[in-house]
Image (cartoon, rainbow, N blue to C red; front, side, top):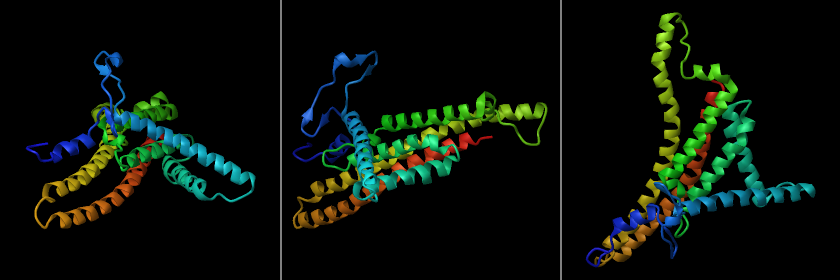
Length: 278
């Protein structure tokens, strides 16, 4: 509060940033969980991250059981199970296998897990008092590092040591001798930078999109408090802001699904590029 008025900036930052509170519950940072410079006391985003993981497990478990029961009775998939099966098949066939290639089936579970995990984390921030773990740079960075390890280790196993080193020291067509060696050494830093840019793009793209949406929503809500006290304006501003917020919330649902799709798609594309580097 500032001189009896609501501090909109503080409210926006409080909801967008991480904290040790959910709903009406607050807890303190535990010194017993301090390990050197790191403290592993669960924060709001960590709690919702685990909720998202549990929802992914629950979704697949329930859908799997329903599909088994329907097929045992020789019935066509329907309802919730049919919807989840359609999404799983889409991500598996049209995202993972289509972009990775003939070896895409073994990477499909990883890509599908990323899709549903990111989707649930994005959507949890749209519920009242919810939080978006993907609005935390540490979370998106962790997902990007995991994707990077799968990309590089998968490429190393597929191409072998010699083939993998060629992704860092490329063979230049049309050159031989000292010129080819010099050019290969010159290209190595650029190739390494290219490997680093991929996880950076995954991290920043997801983080930026999710944070921007929430900041816009909270900022528009703040307009109601800033101008709603003016004579003859309170109803008009309230209705206009609520209408605009409804549209943005609907857009945020679409953005949550789109960003989950883009994260899974780019991961599959990067895996495919490394798998077929030769």
